[in-house]
Image 1 (cartoon, one colour):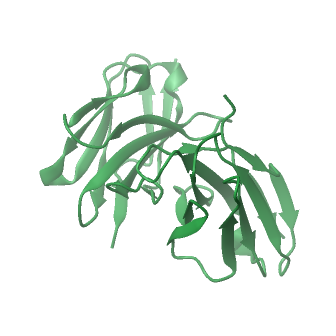
Image 2 (cartoon, helix red, strand yellow):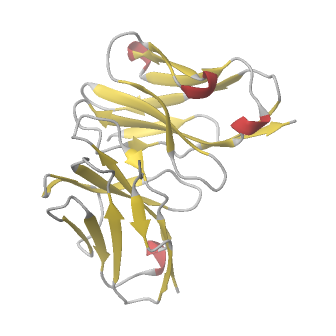
Image 3 (cartoon, helix red, strand yellow):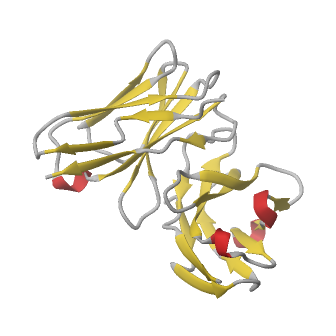
Length: 112
Length: 114
């Protein structure tokens, strides 16, 4: 079975630009969460979506937004990029909100 | 504030040595607890989890962890490490019933020397 997939794998942007990251959950999984992992730190929770509704938001500015589509895939959008947004962005999915999350390989974003 | 603290940032062991990685959490309410592992060049994988029941949980590759509620701890153990255990280990907590809001510790890098 295919695991969680994310695209693109790597991305380079400049300050002030906008970026869209995509995630396809494991087939049948309805819950998707996004995390930011800065080098040398553990992942930080950004958003959770379940059944296409936002179910949680971490301590991130409004420049970060996300959505979940009818097929349960998800997008993370970041506006007005800052150098500090450079990180590995992880997507994780689970069958429902109470089940184990499985992580994708991540998208590595570099902001110059 | 909700947080997870991992006691060791970098651990170096020789093969066959025993391993214990400390993890303490601060969270009001019932929790689920996890250890995830990230092998070099690979993505985060679940090592083991505690939802309820027996506080001693066994995971993959011979790892186990013990939930001590009174100490807010969930330490990871392995009796004899192998070179292939070289990886970064993350402890994480979520509210019970919602595993989609994981709070991670800062991670422990384990280096096993052959």
